[in-house]
Image (cartoon, rainbow, N blue to C red; front, side, top):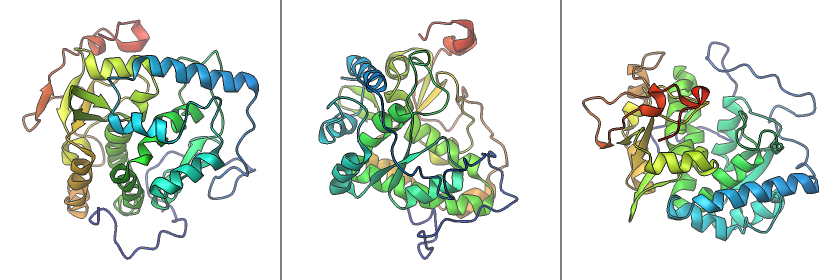
Length: 312
């Protein structure tokens, strides 16, 4: 992914966030430093471990046959079914032996430039808390289950692990061009909500799909959403929804395909051509799209989650 960030850049130091870069303002808790890392992983109660176990069991009822083979293999490699919230030290030891990554605890969503820096150094920041029974089905801010169960197994795949590191390095260039929102769209439609072609049909590799029982069935089987082959230029011009099921999913042929599409693209040229806002609605199908499935958009048109519409 050499065109995303200058190869000579030093990623060992936390980058400064320019004052004129558009990003969400986040207040740093007093107990963490500029790296936003918690002093230690939380000690989870027996009830919190039980919540992890119940969430894990619920996902395993729906993921076989719908989740990417790399994800299912990663679950086994990391032994995430051992019971209770995984201990980050052991998890990092196992993950490091496979692809050189580690998992580090953070208190909440962290600023973009800090997130990029951790990814650039093969550290995955994971929420240092778990949802409650009251928020069991839906939580707005990603917790340890979403981050560890949804994201970390994919980091056992060498090509995908390299993609994630290069995505972090790409943040430096996006900040220089003030196009963090566009780069965020790429993350959203690949790392969070990506689909991959595999034998037997489309499978999910995005963490936002893999950590939710409704979305994994909806993303891979429902008639409502569009499913379109990934085009990086198009994706980075496409709006997205953060609090409901996606109207559109983008599909890759392989993780090598995902890596190649980003490596070979001149991102300096792309950023110069991008407008500040998005060009395409999240439900749009445009002329250049290679469409796998053109959705009915019934779920969206009926009002989505807020209306009680069925995810069909």
